[in-house]
Amino acid sequence: MIVRFNLGALSEVRWYEYLIRFVLGGAMTVVAGLIAARFGPIIGGLFLAFPAILPASATLIEKHQRERKESAGLMVMRRGKDAAALDAAGAVLGSFGLVAFALIVCLVIEWTPPLALVLATVTWLVVSVSAWMLRRWL
Amino acid sequence: MLYYLLRFAAGGIAVSAFAALADGLRPKRFAGLFGAAPSIALATLVITLAQTGRSFAFMEAHSMVLGALALAAYSWTVCLLLKKLMVPSVIATIVALVVWFGFAFGLSAMLFDLT
Image 1 (tube, rainbow over the protein chains, first blue to last red):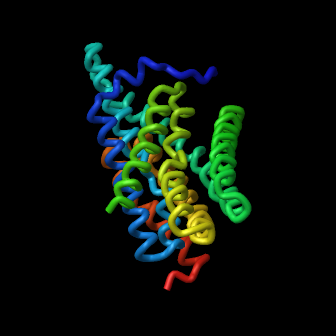
Image 2: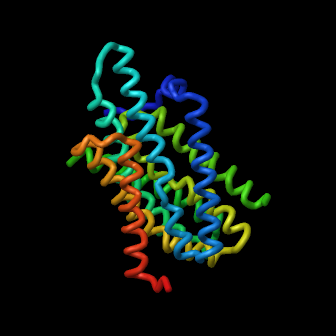
């Protein structure tokens, strides 16, 4: 299976759906900062891995799949949920990458902070993609 | 106020960028990896480093490991609710937040002194 980027899929997302995600992401980052300021870095740190992207993306995937099927004259409810479930299954694998991201930040941040964030992001990608490839093999 | 506006903009941009990447990627399971992208973490850690320094950011990242494990449990629960129980996405993603909070705070209570 080849991984590809479909630019046309971006035009299916409406402007207000981008806006919702921007506002949710921004609000969650502010909330994470307020929690860290009020309760300290241990509680605040938990919220750095709060589910910010998955809720909106799963909901949009189900909605778009349903609309596509309805416009084709089909009434298939199951298909949208299956597509959203696949997205969530991918997020499980991505979460292991996020664990690796946090561990790399812990290991490198005292040494060189900017490099720590770059290295941690690359590690997140490598671990996530490796987990996805391993899942396909099994 | 400017500090929170900056946080809002940084978080919004990071989440939107990763979400847009996920929108365009196929297959769907691969795109799902971006549902657990370090969007809030990157936005927060950059600002934390500039504002409060390395040791605070180190402590946050330390605790984030548990948050990420909770995110795995959350995502798995969402998948289960959608696939097995046929719950609508909007309800599944809200109900499963109980799992995220349970895991995140449960693990933290076991490993750190939260009092």
